[in-house]
Length: 200
Image 1 (tube, rainbow, N blue to C red):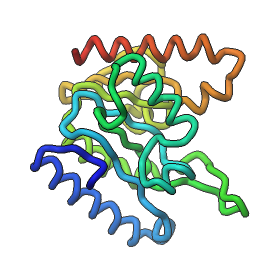
Image 2 (tube, rainbow, N blue to C red):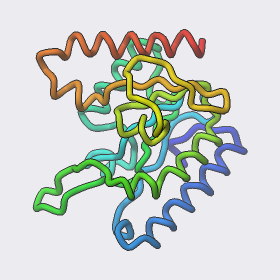
Image 3 (tube, rainbow, N blue to C red):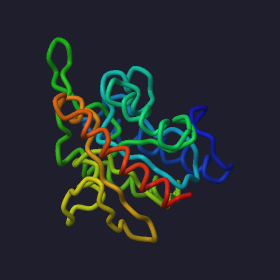
Image 4 (tube, rainbow, N blue to C red):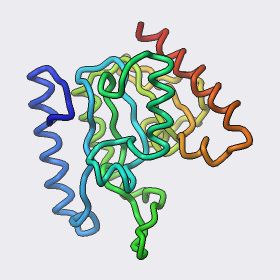
């Protein structure tokens, strides 16, 4: 819990939730050997950032969004908000690294069953964090949060319960599109500025 700055009530609730998730993973044959990576940051928090799943670096450091793509996103947040990563609450839909068991362990897209397993815990996490805005980083995260809505990066939609949802492309996707990186980065920062206006 040392990676989360919380009120006492939120801290206790998150600690109990993380304990439940770890136990559920151990009880699931396909997840029992996985290392869960939990949310980090401030709770309650006006802005909750939700990605797809941890990768190699996140699993190693037990912290979301610390790999190349994560650092790209954190830099954009820093530029727009003037805040460090620990002033937001950052988590993922799937709490374990979805990987292919090759020699070097390659990352794969999370299975639908994995998403469905973790979504109820994510919904509880959102309830504890009490954001005004959720930044849905990537189509997988957006679809898990709003399964009946179309993924339109930079366009607001309603999550429910008074929470707004802002979808953006995942930074790993942006980094793969090097020829359009500058243009896409501008679009990401424009979406982040819309979020900033909403929670200021």
